[in-house]
Image 1 (cartoon, helix red, strand yellow):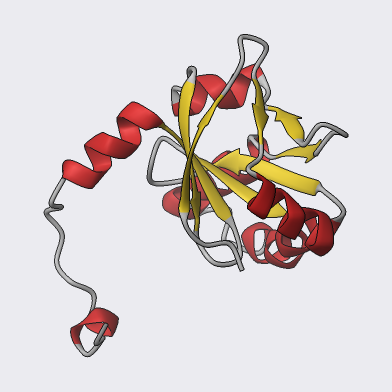
Image 2: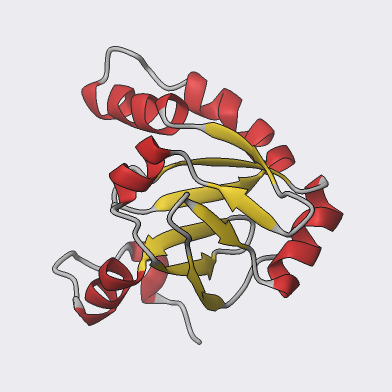
Length: 146
């Protein structure tokens, strides 16, 4: 399970060092094999351990291709998907297309989301934290007690 948020840096070549605690979990869960892709609602990246991605890929492919919203999700999730390997130094190289999509520069936030992680530019993450949102609370959250 991937929890917590980590402030990390990306070098000029697009490499970022995965924090040790997260890296250890990724190495145990998937041998350091990842799939990174675009988030469909936010300008950030989704980071999946490869086995987790293999589970959800058929569900994405099964979405109705004649539905505009579903087709957009397919194009983003599958079209931007990139298989990556954590190197011997615990780093991954984020491709330029994904860096551009998410507006990634030097300062980043790696945020655990249970079975996956999100990778944000630090500025966008802080802006998102400050946004109080304007949507209605989903019915599933009404009875949630924390």
